[in-house]
Image (cartoon, rainbow, N blue to C red; front, side, top):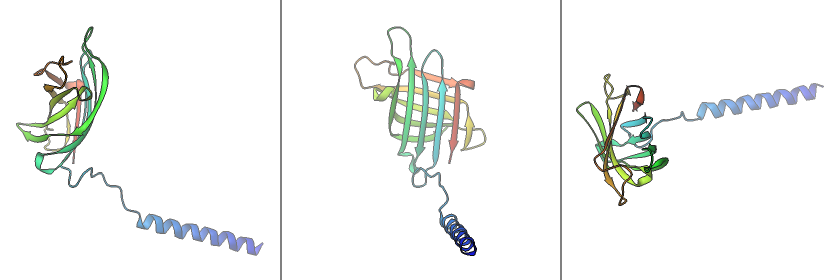
Length: 166
């Protein structure tokens, strides 16, 4: 009985030492999506009927690049595209100006078209929530584009949720 108690105590002590070593040396989680990312942008912009966009990007220093993932759901009615598509890639450029953060060269509709996306900067400064998104179609990679080049879609109020984080 004493031998069994000793084994249980040694096992328990070993588990405690192992847990202390593991948790004492484990690195903390980091939310840095790139070396010194300036922004992490999350957008949910929904219009029914009409287009809807769900977008995430990390924007690198210098305004020249950033990775993004997006899904759009285009509902333009009879004869038009009525489907969802995913696109991802590199933002061509980004810049804050006039109370807006603008990102250029973003593929939409699964890469069939390119757009510029602008979001309102939060009234509190660089980071936080806002409720305005503008998507401007800048080029089409197919002969009959689903959305005309130059079309501008704006979302505001309860149609748009934007989060800008460091």
